[in-house]
Length: 630
Image (tube, rainbow, N blue to C red; front, side):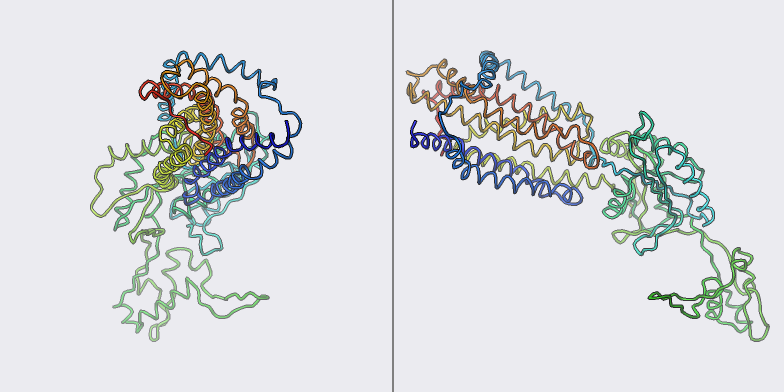
């Protein structure tokens, strides 16, 4: 074979495969459009993946039609061997051809089995749990107990020390650090009654046999049952993300809005009572909005008039005695500190001591504060929360030992049957991770149909035939079968990560189907070229013969396309460490979907293709022959 003949063959082959490879790459890029439209934390997490894959595929699409043919002409030298000269290809054909012939002979059975598998996959899909994002193991635990609002500093300090000692007694705990109240920052509005304890765990190889993080939390929760303290378990990073994005420090929260704090607190307790006993609901408690203790000093104006005092005189003395009065400043390096003066603690540490605070008068000398004012403790809100120009309370809980979606759905049904009608001016809404899940699901529901239409448009532009485009597109639901089966048997909940895996699967499945369609249409071109295109010269046996040739003779490139995807994904199944929790839900539907879509493309697509060509020959007296190279 001379050089011109070799170049001609390479050019013909490039014209045949190049456009299909290019447009299949465009389809894979289009399938990632929903990932770009995700917002919030899911968008920040997955957009780097989408951008990286898109740029790689853009370069790949350009190189497939430009550089690859040039490299083939330069690197492929010597005698060109036919497909059947490859021993691996011969073995694959011997295995594949009998199976394909059987499928073509029993077409209705094959289609029935696939439809049944699709129905079973749909049933499994309805049985899957749902969540916003797969729980990412941060390697540490955040313990957030809440005490009574009127707890004293000394008592919360004692509780904190007791809890830290109990936590440290668990063998898997490396270190523990607790904090009560707010930190030295303006953004931390935590009351003294809220404790935050960060628990660092030892490496997993030093854990007791059979221990998991969930078992460690269950053991700690059982040991830390202290009266007056409601436990809460989460992780440091996700806790901060939840608080910043939704204002809720647990997995799920129910925000109760209204005008009166007492009514809000009453409604919140009714909701809490309704949610008790719901499977999966853990660490359930009402955010305290009443029960705080306030020191009230009610000045008797008639009495201060007798002593020749004014309200301002009394307020200045009380403020100085209890709160302190700045008298000077001290400078240490670049830092400046105010020096305040107030009564010693022994003279202000009880109600009786405050009542005895002396008030100097001009005529009667010093008189006790109790002589001119009523001093008492009063109930009030420990902290007032507002949102959307309304007062707000919250019922908070975490979700463990069950998926988030099913837990919230059951909780909603429980509230509908037991909470009754909310008073006028009061309402509640769901927040936390469930709020993020609803937002992400709404985005995906809008965008995924649009992406499928874009893929269908690219296929039509490739084939110039709506029929051929639909034949390729029906690969997508059958590709989902394997993804659903894998997700179901792995026990993974539906989440944004799983949705991203299915989105990536769309493009891969269509890419494999396009290769099969290209080769089947090439076989039809050979058939028409040899026997003509009419019912007088063509038979169903001729169509079947060339369908088998188009499917079986080019088996190796199809399997190579599938194998590259599988070999790149399977190692993720054994991945461990930080990040594996997110990568596994993406990979599982991809692996299962690639397997089932490949089976469908190799066995069912030729069946459907043959049935379409037989229908065309029977109805129109000829078959449609597409030149997919153009």
